[in-house]
Image (cartoon, rainbow, N blue to C red; front, side, top):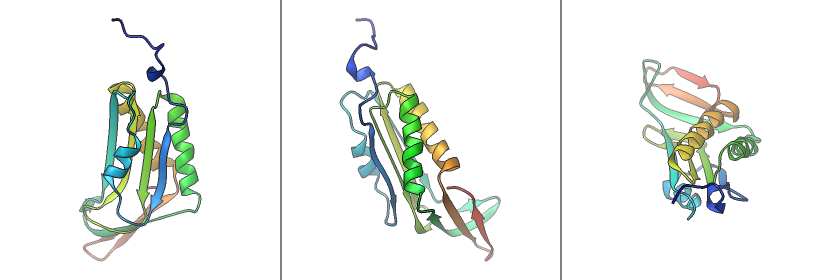
Length: 153
């Protein structure tokens, strides 16, 4: 049978944005993955951003994230751009604020689409645009006692 885009499952869902949130508690991969489950999705892409132990050649001990009160609304705006560009069946994005240690989850995003290529592309656009457009700031503390604020995400 030849593939066709006429089937409803090949199209974007009516309300594909399932979860957008800023949390001050540890993030859950399961929460995000469950949110993007869709029987018409043949591909689900998930990205997990974690706190690494280094940045710019220096050892990182810890960091803290803070955000502007508009951050969640801005996350939704970015998500709406992604669903307008790709046939998204379901989308979820959560970001952590507060103090985090090395290895902690800072951000989790996921996108389900009819096919894997679309899911990968949509997920990449989602995380890249969130990083550049959402007012979330990172305050890093280095092993040598110095500190640094980093723009968005």
